[in-house]
Length: 243
Image (cartoon, rainbow, N blue to C red):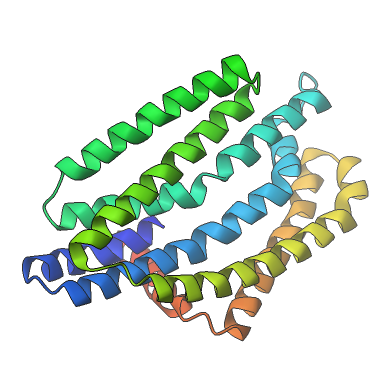
C-alpha cells in the first residue's frame, strides 16, 4: 500500500494544481482499488493463519496454548483494520496533494476520539479485553475513511464509486477463493505442524502461504482484475528506486 501511495502522490499533486479533477478522480480511483487489491488478501490471510503465525513466533516453554490463542485473537481483530487504515492513509495523501492539511487533521482528531470512546466501552464495560482495543482501532479508521471519502467526493465530484465497487467485488471474490484454499491447505498440515519444532513449523507454514499467493494471482487473472498491472508497475518501481 505504501508503494501505491508513493506512486500516486506526485501525479495527484500535479492534477490538483491544474484543477484537472477528472484526472484526479481517476488517479484516486485506481489508488483505492489497488489498495484493496493488496490489503484484502493480507487481511484474509492473517485471519486464517493468525494462530499458527503467532504460535511460530512466540513458541517457547513460557508461552501456553491459551496465551497463543489470546494473542492470535487480538491479531485477528487488529487486522480487520488493515484495509481501513490503508485507505485512510491514501485519502490523507489525497488531501495533502490538494494542499489541505487542516481537513485531514480534523478528521484524524475525530477518529482518535472515537477510538478512545470505543476502547473505554469495549475494555471497561463490555469486558472484551485486548480484542476490544483492537476493534476500536479498526472502527476508528473505518469511520475516518467514510468521512474522508464523503468530503473528498464533495470537492472533486465523486470518487468513481461504481468503478471502485465493480473492481472491489472482483477482488473480494478472488480473495475469498484464496482464503478457502489457504484454510484447506492449513488444515492439511495442521497435525504435523503442531508436533514439530520451530524450524520445521516455519517450513510447513510456507505451504499455505505459497498456496495463498499463487491462488490469489490465479483468481485475479481469471477475473481480469485490471488493478494488477498498476500494482506490478508500482512494486517494480519501488524495487528499482527504493521509494
